[in-house]
Length: 306
Length: 260
Image (cartoon, rainbow over all chains, first blue to last red; front, side):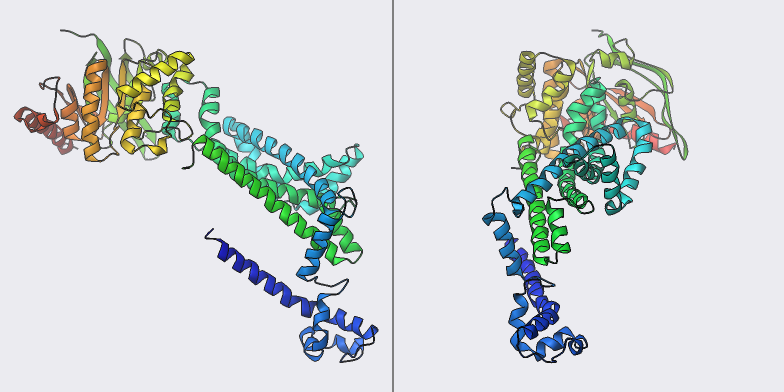
């Protein structure tokens, strides 16, 4: 609870910057609109206004400042416009409607979760291989790191086109891009976690003449659980980004990515912004969910002091 | 009374190859430990006392020479569950309860469930931790954790207990208490104990046999058979006999140091 004030302060500052920025960002558009509506504007031609800075224009036309917050197609939507759009598309539309963000959210979320499951599974398998196999230890990690240096934005369309060519469509290509982004933190975290038992703990198992499998199930795997959760929290948000990115270049018709694209292409920034916020809220909720799971699991395992 | 030999080391050498050249961790070590002995290994760091203990446990392989445990090689002895090993840190698994930690070797060795439960109860009583079975390690003090780790080493009835500075990280008061308890435990269980320490009073108080070692190369400089009675209250440390043995240990350590 001690963090409430600092968090609210940061949110407040961000909102303030946002609210203040709306005026200069939208001033020229507002002036043009006002003139078409027959209001007095100084300077009175669009060409003349081009030579005046946004701030100066606002100071010369103080009666128009209020209108910058209510444009239908603003350059920068105001917070209340984004909020109203979010409310409308989340709560007031039927969830089966193409205008419902819940519908689009589920499309993206399902690909995210599938991709996350694939990525996590793959990541754990690779980590076990790296820890137990010398050849994999030497060979896999450099490739895993290299895979993350390629911009996913460049890779995503290629993956989707190639998978499409062999008949793989729908949720799977998106899930694969999600998995591509989420396996990496799991590999890194699990390798560190599986290697976290020290020499003394390994020696102890040797004195019991324990088998390799017993060492894995009784020592290495439980010891890696805290590391796994740290990775899962990074992995789930990377998965969501992957699913959205996968929707962007392909003209997907549903999903947060599709919503952002629609807003962009049809000049409806409010739609884009609402989709952005919905995606951010979804990511925060997912990470929050995993934090909760982490706390419950570690407490149950006795690894945190309750 | 002549007890059978438990551990027999003959002309034991162990050399570690390091970047700075070979390190003679053990040189020409000869030692015989009888069943039921309490043997302390004392010496400055680098004298090979821990290395020797690890050789007995089969955790290190000697470069040359011979060592047998109960007449077997250390590897065979390990497979026969001849010894329990206690490390300097308790090393309890934080995700297992105290009972779960003591069950660990029993699970690995395949004891059945009922037997496990019975043994856990028995060794917890032996180290005075009855009632702590369901607690997690972080809920116990350092001394209690170390006692739990001793219980873990006792659970599968090995007749040798190897202890590598088990109380080194504990404060003096806790240490005295644990030393007293360890002697009682030894008297009750009649185990053979190998005990590494760098505390002279601890070595003299506990042992029937004190092995003084010196470094570079690691070797035995003196073996002292203690004349103290088996039954030792803490205030035996103020008797002339005790002080005399302590003196001899100190001389041995100093001699080992002088000819470096």
